[in-house]
Image (cartoon, rainbow, N blue to C red):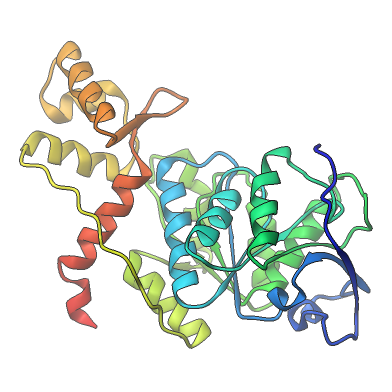
Length: 316
C-alpha cells in the first residue's frame, strides 16, 4: 500500500446538490462520499469499464476500445483503478482527453494498489475524481471491495466488462449493475480461452453481446443518446504473406501455443520459432506468461479499424 494522496478533500453528504443522483438508487445509499478532485466529474453521463487484473492483449484491446469510444461520445469513464483492465481503461480515457473517476476500496486519500499512483495523479490533473465510501486514511479491507463495486455500478448508466475469467471479482460489479437496472455490455471471447469464460457466461445470462466496434458504438448511442466524434487516422495491418494472414486471423480468435501455430502455418518446430520471432520483432505478436502467443493490442486495434473500413461504415 503506497502513501496517501496529497490533494484537497471533500466529504459529500447525502442530500446535498453534489451527491451523485445514481448513488441514491442503491439500497442504504451511503450517507457520505469521500472525494478528491472535481465533484462535477460525478454528475455527467458515465460508463464503468472494469475487468480482470490479468488481461490478455485481447482484453486490453477491448478495454481501450471501449474507453476511446466513450470519450469520443463525451461519456465519463469510471473504474476501480485496479491493475489490469481497470487501469487500462482509465489510462486510455485520459490519453484520449476524457474524464476518469476512480472508486477505491480504501480511503480516497490512500494509494492502493501502489501501481495506481500514476493513474490517480493523472485523473486528478485532468479534472476527474477519486471516490470512496470509506473515511480518510482507511486501509484496504476485503469487505470494502464489494461495496466499492456497487458504487462503481451506481455511478454509471452502463458497465462494460473488458475481460473476465471464472471465478472473477468483476461479477460483483456486473451483478450490482443488473440489480440497479444498468445495462451490462460484454464482448465474447474464445470458448477455448479461460480468460473469457466469465465474459461468455455473462452474455449467456443476459448481458448485451458486443460483437464489434460498431455494435459498441450503437449500444452507447442507444443507452446515452449521444454520438461519438472520432478523430485521428485509422491504422492498418497489411500482409502479403498468406501464411502470416492465416496465423494472424487464428491468433485474433484466441492465443495459441507454438505447436498449434506450426500446424496452422505448415512449419516445422524450428521454422515456426523463426517465424514467431519475426512476428514478435515486428510488434505483431507477443508471448504470454503461460507460453502461448497472442496478437499485440496494437494489432488488435488496427484489425478493428480495418473491419470498419471494409464495410461496417457503409451500413450507417
